Length: 624
Image 1 (cartoon, rainbow, N blue to C red):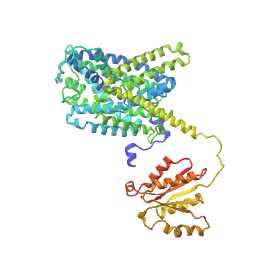
Image 2: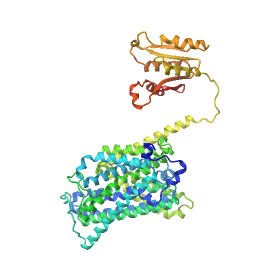
Image 3: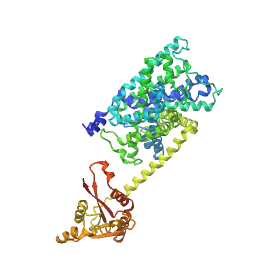
Image 4: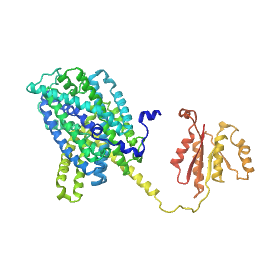
């Protein structure tokens, strides 16, 4: 077995695709880990905005998270209907494309692509933040740890959906299990203590209050930050095709378990934070700890269960990026199928995955982590906007879907109401998130979305032009067939140029061997051997001798004079093709390329850029 097979797994035949489908148990970590792990940073993201209120901020966090959970419930019921209506995958792009048209579908596509990239970046950075909470000495290596985890995730996902699901099942259930135990024990102690439990380890004291009252603006900002807990909800509807039959039912079951668990985790950790008097810390503070780290210390102390919980969070949070790795390639494939992204995203790799989508996601995520130093709180302001735009467009598209379905409004009025209410709720939330986070960094997302849309429209124009030019339903045209004029650049006479000349003699009787002569050569050059090595042997066979064209180059330029000659020859012979035969050596090892000039590659590039339909390039390799 080769190294690549050991690392990425053996290639799978197309006929083996059915075996790669997954059940509910594997579907939860693959498509739900992003949503589930948001319980580890969603409440803290909301609480961070309440730091100016000091201890008084704890009175408002439960109502804020409750409002987010109500919104989550609305989106949940809406996506249950979307899965039922689109059993072959009903992500926002697909729904918007089929029901709302090109403009809204591209808006959904751009928003989702940005959201998935940020999902991967936030998941990884949040996991590293949990690690640093337990081992503060690693804080200086935050970015390096993030990039290592990203590389590991990319390799795991390149092994295939089924293997990725198997790899993530244990960490997912360990994460959920430890938090459920934390919530259960914490609630038990809270009830016994009459609502005021005594922490095993005292939490850090809250910062002094700098704001006396919670204003509307601060409330909205806290709400919008907490909405980061809702990202990843759409993943199941986008990946329905990954499930075994009956795929729609299994997808709905997986989504129900994911949302039900998330509600318990979000509300439980928030309730306990208020009961134990735990507030968020400034991310740049000395000895920074996450809210979950402080809460676990308060309930269990810094014993083995604390480190088990932190370890589970550390494992699960980076793996939550797997939701993006699962859905981004599918999204890119759907967009590319409509010619809005390069067609390379349509190709399936060795493990039946859309591998190029994984490569692209890995690259973009690495750039984001590098730009923001791998710090979660620097990424949160960019987060959630794309998700809520996608939510809104998906639900709006579903309203149109039910309206146009058989029976129309009279038969599907309830479905229209659910999706319409969901669209209204998420639409308002989108505006709130955009306005409250705009100056904190959301303006970056607001600019990137239209830029991405313009790029996709440019890709579409290119493919449309290619189709117009390439489409030809007429029979092959046999008029005016004529041998091409063959041009062979020759630096010297050797075995590779001999091979090129032999091939040229097969193509045409009109061959021009072009030699660029510089003063550095002196009297030596191709002229001295031409008669003996080329002209006389060809004349003996009764064939036409190729013309040797020697071009002087006082300044030792080679490519410029060659290009000028080829373009002039093409211009002087309208209607005829010019075949440029390029002899080149192919080395046995990649590093040997540095030992040889790359003029052939540069000439080839210049011919492709400056040439036209009548200039043909032929490579003649000589393998060393």
